Length: 74
Image 1 (cartoon, rainbow, N blue to C red):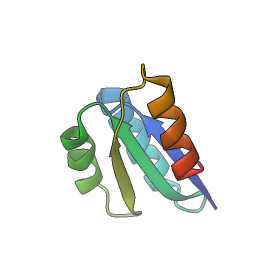
Image 2 (cartoon, rainbow, N blue to C red):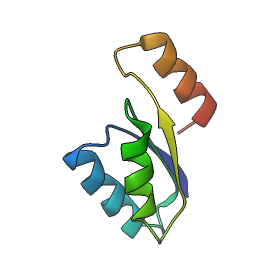
Image 3 (spheres, helix red, strand yellow):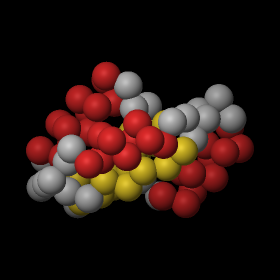
C-alpha cells in the first residue's frame, strides 16, 4: 500500500481523489494539498473509503513544496 500526494483541489483534483479512494487496495493514504485548504477539507469530507489528509501549499513556492514532500513522504 502506498501514500499519494495530490496537489490541486479543483475539478480535476476532486476526481483524482475520488478515483484514488476507490482503489484503497493500492492507496493506503491520500494527501490533498492546495492553496485553499478549505477546498481540500471539503473534498476530504466527501470521502468515506480512506482517510484523506489535507494541507495548504503554494505549488509555485518550491521550498514550501519540498518541505511538504519531505514531510509526507508520498
